[in-house]
Image (cartoon, rainbow, N blue to C red; front, side, top):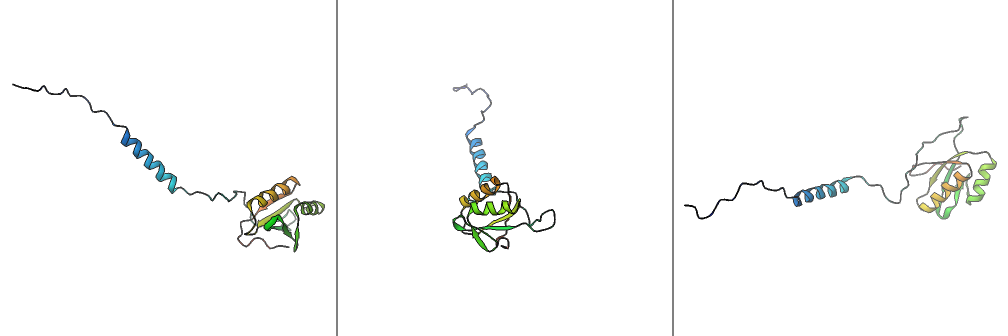
Amino acid sequence: MQLVEPRPARPMPIRITPLIDVVFILLVFFMLTTRLLPIDELSLANSSRQGTSTGDPLPALQLQAGGDVRWRDQSWRLPELTRALTAEGIRRVNLAASGDASLADFTTTLGALTQAGIEPRWQRDSAGPEVR
């Protein structure tokens, strides 16, 4: 004689909470292990020291703190520099930034050169290009 009736056999439901926890942990793991770029860097097409079609090297410009640009051993303000480059028929330049130049000055210089019809090529050299 049985006093308690046996429970009917029913499938056990899958609990979703541990699965969500595992997916969340995997998401956090992959987010933390991916390579992230620093926020203050700008990703641009990089070029090595290239020359013009005649074989002459491209003019080298170096952006300094405060937005001045060094070219041919003198400091230039941006409007005067774009006028001088355009007057000489220069259409492509190598641009490097000194360590103390701000990102805002760099993007302003890139925009002004592009607007003047000059194609700036950014150089990643840590020392920068040789300034002429």
